[in-house]
Image 1 (cartoon, rainbow, N blue to C red):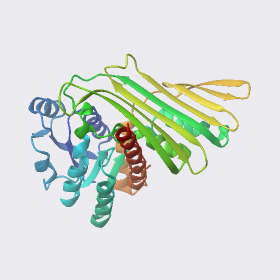
Image 2: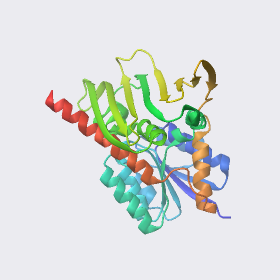
Image 3: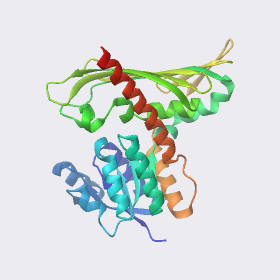
Length: 322
């Protein structure tokens, strides 16, 4: 079978994991890499023996490509995905599909009209933590409450796009996996509230610290709280997921968890996230070559994007009132 010919837009961590995944699978061949910064672009191309292209616009127009992987700044996801679809390419894009739900919905419709794959990666659903939680979930009974808490100290030197309002987007939109995970566990959402605090950086358009919170109420009546923060005012990282059900509780701190049912406590180890990009890539190639269903549909990601955008709107309203 002819190998799928692939082009990648981006040179960061996700782009590297994608290149390595395609090398391991063997059903596809990465031909070219597009990146804004010359040094990173050429280093990436040399490492994986690819053609380096300065402009993503030139990459998506190439006739010798079947599939375009989009893993660059969030602000450009929708624009690049549209250009690739319009030029007849299948598209895999890191979440979010776009910063605007209306743009994301239009892209999903375009892919259907063109009969092309549009896959929005959600590797959080493939990782050991989520799979362990899904396996344990029935033991908790009906879920009543959850709290998902993520704090990260600043790891980037400014200016960096992940601390730029326009390039990164609202944190719960950019870090869409937080909302996606809770929706997958609790189901449809009825109401949301949110708040956000940003500490400006000296550079215009950038911030040095953010702290965002949200409350989600679900159709089942359950409530969950989301907390996400990163930046210079956070001294140490912290990641926790707590779920409360009518029969027990489940709490993870990092990848180590405890299931409590009555007086019985069971330790759990969710393992690492290693290999999730490969799992996602294999799923894409299984779909393209054999028609196997993917683990997530773009409409599911779009729903999470709608919820994240509602959080953003309520947070902005609170900020304006104050």
